[in-house]
Image 1 (spheres, one colour):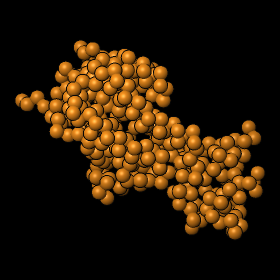
Image 2: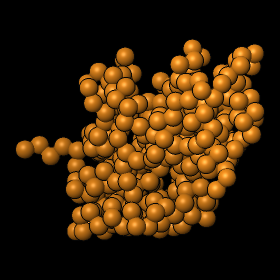
Image 3: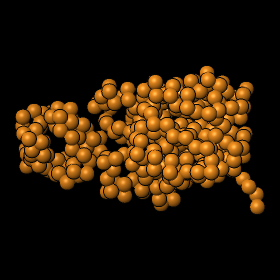
Image 4: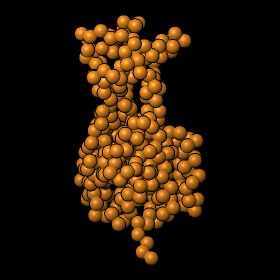
Amino acid sequence: MEQKFLKNFKEILEVEDRDLSLEDNFREYPEWDSLANLSVIAMIDDEFGVVIDNNEFKKINTLGELFEAINLRTTK
Amino acid sequence: MLNLFSLSEKKILITGASSGIGKATAILASKNDASIIIQARNEERLESCFSELNSDKLNAKIIGDLSNESDLDDIVDKSPNLDGIVLNAGIVKLAPISFIKKGDLDLLFEVNIKSSILLIQKLLKSKKINKGCSIVFVSSIASQKVTIGNSVYAATKGAINSFTKALALELSPKKIRVNAILPGFVQTNILGTEQNEEDLKKHLNNYPLGRFGEVDDIAYLIQYLLSNESSWMTGNLIPIDGGFSIK
């Protein structure tokens, strides 16, 4: 699932050739912008069936935190 | 004192009247002596709007879902002959273009434009639109100044703008006027949880007058368009946006 998450995340930012780590603060990526923001929220809904609203998403900074937020809801 | 913009003796139908711009318009028009017919999906909220209308007038409320054709027929059946129609019902769904779902696409077009076209058609066929009636579409400045993630909503509002002009042309022999207003950001619940204080603060920088719209700002313009004082206006698209579109 972690691989699927990272693969989809890379696709959105179009950085398929780069290694991303769960430690990364994705908001600091040069490719991060408002379109990426909306796209990631939509991707998580589409691929994992998890709805994270914009207010909650604002508080998440690293890929690990985001993955954890998805995990918490899919394992319930 | 001049008694301008009166809606006295007018019967006015307002869709999406349970909250926001629709509700404010219903209450304002009611205070200005119109009889009001309000429509919305949510019974409880529609009732709360209805209870604020001037009870000296004959008002009506119709619960119905505009995306359902039999509900449209019901609205037409329950409507008297109309002197004003405000097509205000609308929904928003934010998604980048790559993630638009067909279901959302269909729903937004259904509620934001198709239902209004069908409702007007049905009212015309039933001869419930009086000569001299004023029809007001609540479009959006989003139809002209686009933002990321809002493409489908913008497209539905663009469709409203075009339809407004076509309808105005076809109804002009009957002196029925049709105009659309294009509000900028008004603080209502249309965005639900997608509103975020930090984003709103940033967005406020795009508004030269330094504030977002209030529902009454929009209702005043609608009242003008419903009144006889606007009788030389038809087929016009009127931005009302605190200067958003000049920046």
